[in-house]
Length: 532
View 1 (cartoon, rainbow, N blue to C red):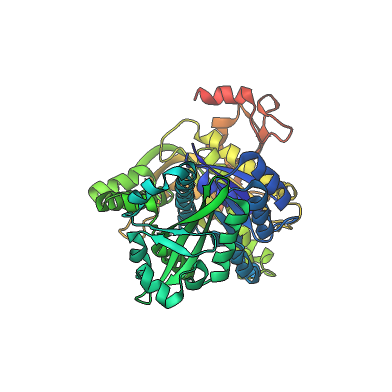
View 2: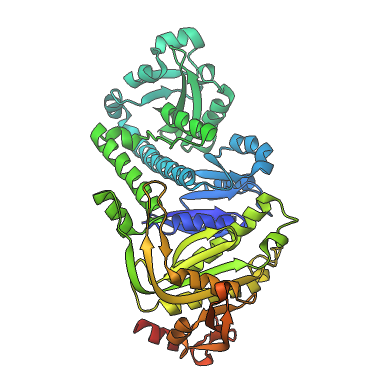
């Protein structure tokens, strides 16, 4: 079963980034909510395994949301709060309210996935801790027998009376605290509220057990005999004598390494979080190292596949080089924004990059959906190619449909996010079909690229295009003319006196379009497309 993640964030870009990070994995199911009230209602319905909430959610903010989930659902799970630089003053308050982790926006892929892994590991630990708590509750009458078992466990097992006085500890107690029970009593006293770093908090949890008659789990700190600060995961469970609570059993696990790794990640943002949960402790060293190696290799493979085609990666690994490939026919698209330099004169560099990232990210989504290979961006220009690296016969249709969807997106920005005002940049697109060479050159900073007159011709077609239009060459027109409405432009002179026969593509023909603009194909077109 995939882990259910509830993402509560009113920022659609953040929603899209998280879904991009997680939905490709069978391990996660992502549920979205844009305000705190909807998130609370959804949490009641789906019972998520993890909640990621923006600290500045409308209606109910992230901290209130998590407090209400804890109160109304009575569940234990990892809670992650996301924040921006404007919310930094609220982070301390969030941490005081029992938040498992905090994540600063915008999310970085490796850090975000590491935090999710940490949350999953914490969730597994909670599940196992709940199981232990249920076992203790179920077998109250076998406490004496169980004491023989827990005596040698690596965890600290402590039996307290209802006033908080310690009556018995196992051998694991000294391993964690560094003191025997007598040594601890002489230095701090023999009561629960005497020796932890936050005694009032621990005592409140103890009183909660007595009042609710249910198990409670929390994290506290302690300075060991050697002066080491240790983080302890404590579970308090009531033991009954008839209907009356007679004892309270505390099971404590040393989670210092997990906490140190977590804090290091928050400070440095450059180290992967190293988890040392209870399940990992049961595995031998070889299994742990092998799993870590496989995880790292998977990350590298994913990053490489976003940069280079699989056949290039395979050749580089096996032979140290990748020979460029010749393609008899492929379709190249160039797109750029009209008057980009003038349009940006009143924008800061950060705003320019932010807007370009917004537009190019949408273009990326479109070309992936149309099976077109993105090659690169150069300033405000976007270049992609159909029919590579895997040869196919559908590439002219794929690229033209992608181009029409580019223009549709640019003309319908108000529907994307009505509250945000995006710049009204106009896009020019040129498309040409012909032979080319694709591959990588050089030996450092590899980049997949294409060469040939086909590439230059596509760029010339873009330059000769009117804003908001899709301009194709005769070679592309001859491939698509039976299915698209095309407007002849005749021979138009481009750079160096060359003349190119050009056509504007106005959209799919009505019998192949699913809507009036002719941007999106219907079932008739799809039947033809599947036969290519």
